[in-house]
Length: 202
Figure 1: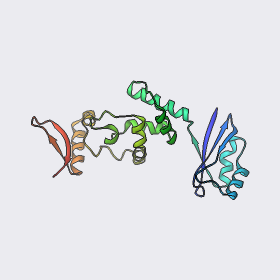
Figure 2 (figure 1 turned 90 degrees about the vertical axis):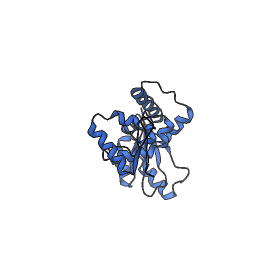
Figure 3 (figure 1 turned 60 degrees about the vertical axis):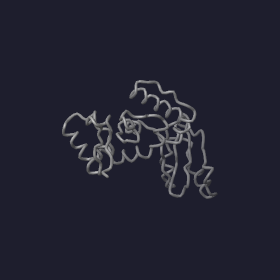
Figure 4 (figure 1 turned 30 degrees about the horizontal axis):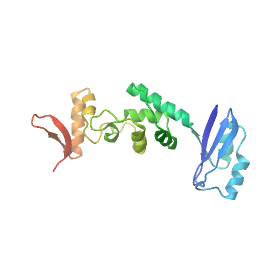
């Protein structure tokens, strides 16, 4: 079993990636864009342990943080598994999409937040959700912001028919419309009285 860790600190412009296979050091990837100074290099090699069990302790001695990383193949499996669970379909992932996932931190918590999000950018006008790797990649920071905010934001800042139809009580519907009105929006309707959208007051 291979475990990957990203090592970082305020003094490093870019992280160092170390891999342990069955608990033993197997690979070190030093940054190429911002290489270590000679002093940093010597200090790091002096403290990097051969045994994975000592990694966090040894790195703490030189004030370097240790962040476990999800191997790339596990990110792909996790993504496809979540898609199948939430959409009921197999996801045919492309090579460009695989490269995009490799750049991001992909965990169960982040994917759960992604599928629970009611953000207009993610859900789309119909409120059904695009849920592609490209969509996930483009709005990754938005997902992290929503996770940091927790449950503070109950209603989206835009109107979504799909989201509106999911509300289970008249009180929630009234609160949702009230939230939109506080943002300066008002309903735009067709001749039959059906709501087409909520737009800024003119």
